[in-house]
Length: 152
Ligand SMILES: [Zn+2]
Image (tube, rainbow, N blue to C red; front, top):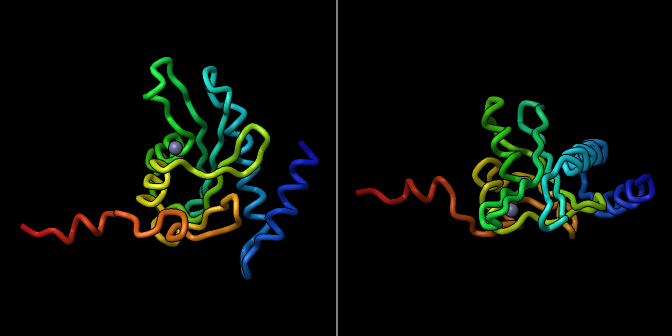
């Protein structure tokens, strides 16, 4: 794992935009790896861990939880968002998710919507192609303000 950690840090440093905090991102990735180790993935054998920083400084995590009824499987982001809400809410500011190798992976389409709801356009996401804003991860996203635009 140490080699992977170093590779990931090197990858991150190569992708860092001005003003990004390497220690913050590597700490979040480590939290995601810890969460991944607790995943319940007996069917896919593809454990995933996710971690995010909240605007009050909390770190929330989640792991995927599969089910014999494959369609009701929960992604790691589902657990993370649940932990966010049950521990007091707030806005997600930084997010990363990893696979069994500790490598950064992308949230699935549904989970991008979950992250947008709780982090908005300014949520920073460590993606497979570097650090990006949520507005790039889910362009022209449908969000809470869209509901307000329809008046009856
Ligand atoms: Zn997902």
